[in-house]
Length: 164
Image (cartoon, rainbow, N blue to C red; front, side, top):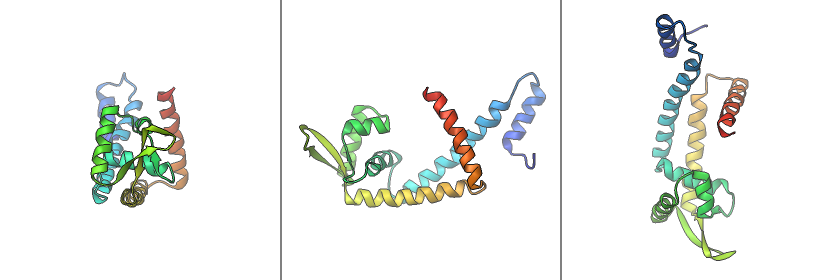
């Protein structure tokens, strides 16, 4: 091991106190927790600079990823953002108030609405994703492209184990 980090020091102390336990899960998950805090800070700063809240980002980015004409039903937004129906209604109302989205009648079903990203919403989400990619690349600067790909693969494997 070339350099020790805080997790190494914590695990080392636990190994001294409790040599009967396997602390390898802490070596992985404590680092993930610490890295998550750095990621949260970076994302909050990106969203602040883009004048967006994280919940606004969730909705606007789902609409942007949908492709032109950048619209989804409220039900589709619910599926992508994993919030309750009442929460989504409130979020859409607030985004309409900020003129970042608009409600439109669904041409396929007159009783339903579609939520559409406005030009201002698209400009804002495009600026935010550019900043986000730059900020996250900076967080990963210590890793080579190959290291990133291996880590992404391992994290995908772990993530899929929770979804199974």
